[in-house]
Image (tube, rainbow, N blue to C red):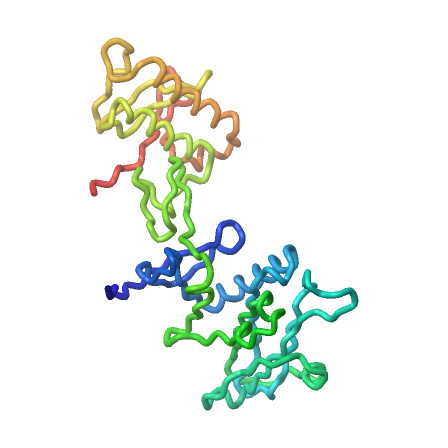
Length: 313
């Protein structure tokens, strides 16, 4: 079956090892359920740094690494030696596995490609003579090395990753277990990165910045269980913080235990969330919480919490 090529902007990761990284991908283009992302150069640089850290921690014989070589379009040809770390198969005193990347910077504008070879003594000598030259447009060469296969003598274990027509680099597609990165809402729900609106009504970019702001979202969740139409609440912080009124639009909802939709346990649960947030909050958090100060003769600290608007779809 042919899938419509509908590209989206999102973020991907591989568990907690790699990512999250911004990318573009077609969510229908899957390999055993995994994604095939395309990265801009800045994301490739970050991915490179992450793979190198992982290789240093876990060993090069079980990690694939990404390398970004940079110069100018009019730079002299260069040779770059990329060294792998120790392999579990190495004998004591044996050199680390390495490759040489030969880059014909000027000829690349005419269609020439970089070349990967063994790190011979001649290549190492040429790499030591490398000089940074050129003043024209920046150029990069991205290298993907699969050390575990290079160690076995594979001739396809290292390759040059070329950009597509949009200047994006496909790395790990149909090979790595990329999956969507998530973001967590203050309400406790998680969504894929490209799903910018949570079911509670908050968006990814409108998350509360303080414990009190988060408490307001959670209080709304609690009160909407028995009263789905609840839109706001008044909280009194004068002494022991508590919810003192709940509204649906401009109409106050009965909070009496015997006649309204709420019971003592529900209101007590909301009060507990409020008091825990007050214990964690700093003095300036009230101003940043988004709560509205309500003048009142009986209370010195009465605030209205407006709950997120639940999407209609």
